[in-house]
Image 1 (tube, one colour):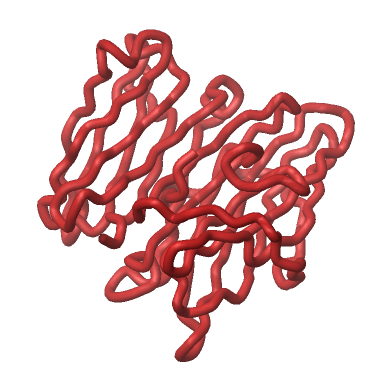
Image 2 (cartoon, rainbow, N blue to C red):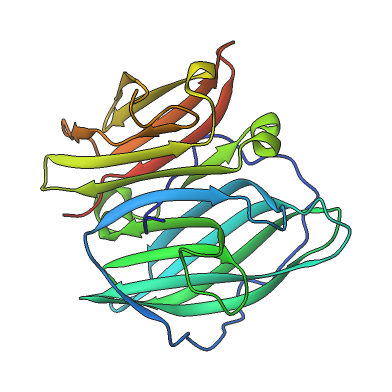
Length: 267
């Protein structure tokens, strides 16, 4: 899955929260991978164990001259009777390599919905930071139930500390198994957008808003070659001065299914 992810655009769903401390840090993972192209985005994914993520958000603030503090919150339901063991993790990319820098264990109890939270100190020279809910002992991409990745635009300038993430409505959270949205820069003014939703293309509509002082909305169309049983598009989009992007995915009645927002990635 892509490494970047989104901003909060609707209030967090009402849930019975299971508190998870936000200060415990685990030893960094030895897993490394190459940073190819800076991008930002978000993904939620239902693994075979059936965990259902309805909301994920992340924000990063500068703390002193050479440190950042990253925050992650994930709302997840475990429909099974047994507990699900997970890890809240931050992956950091500095120069050319990415690695898991901070992590802490989490448990989603059987039959319960929980909001899991994690905050950690990160080196101030990070080029990209990704927050994830994943299976213990696994690397990102293959086992993440939720992932939000941000580049330096998320913690510098006017938008520093803004919340980014994705929310699914109650019905969508139980029906959609995968939502993946990310932006990869080609240069300052243009980027490739990838949007995948496992919803039938004739049953949904989507809009994209480019936002700065105000938001300008455009309609997204399914790709007839890719979007046969899923919504799968990869358009090249122009920035038009936008600082962040907002996605709204609807059903045929016009009811919102997915809302999300991500910053324009740092070139």
